[in-house]
Image 1 (cartoon, protein in one colour):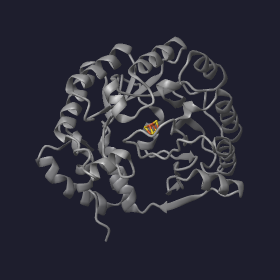
Image 2: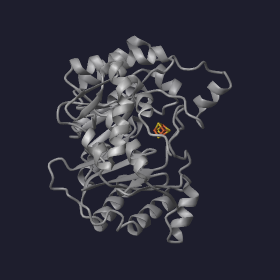
Image 3: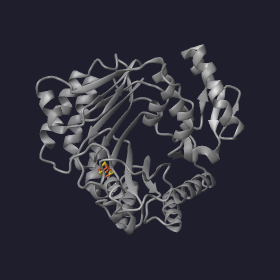
Image 4: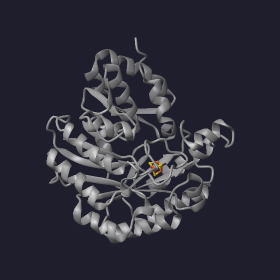
Length: 380
Ligand code: SF4
């Protein structure tokens, strides 16, 4: 089984915090979509014939495409890859922004494509947050989008929310979560705002036009997120992902469990069990290379240490934790190293273990990545 990701690198506006690859000009949309179809053809053997159990259209903003354009992409995918669409949890997700959604487009999407799950970039239900983030939608758009999704029969929904923004008070954050619960949405991705290079926010902080983010507030809002979602019956199955029982995101879960996946489009990443590769994040270069029959990518063959690092990093972020047997299978020396390195965190109560599994305690989840990096093995 495998997953397929498609990156649609266009957005209406540049959100101030976002460092994903996208262009706010749609000038190259048509040649880029033609190049995506070419890349699907060229990558037909990458997954070695494995059947697709999930397809994810992300970006960027896939909801900027017309349904006819999306239909053409899906026709190509189904022509090239075996698709396991008879599985009960077969998942086809499309990321959408609230301001793009209208009833006719959603009805058409349902009728003409296999999309059965929407991931809606709400971020906040408050206009001052949305303005500060430079989102293209308003709080009213956010509410309307969720109503329209339900009305047109898209019940498998997930939304994104952001906490820790300077405009997001604790009361606003609680209100964002309350609105999420009120809609009865089965899945939430909640992200802590971070300052990234190459973004407007990164520049403001570097030039001291914006004070650094308030980490204490972010931690407080994260702790509220954990308790409010637990009270409402959601499982925190990954640090940033919350689901009603059994409603985990199939596609993202396959990333965390080490299943192979193919990424199509500029900046998309792929993994086949032995190596990772990523397409260069440049729309014009992508189009030109594909016109010449080449996929413009860079590749890294994963060493044993790379695999260990990735497994510890992703495993600790999930509610299932790190399975010692999987580390043992990578080598007895890595198992010994892990057991020695984890000892201090067990003593400090950052990590707990039962049987073969090592998991972060709730109080240490906010610092998940820092704790994982303490368990990394320095290259010899
Ligand atoms: S957050 Fe989403 S909509 Fe905003 S710039 Fe990034 S990819 Fe585009």
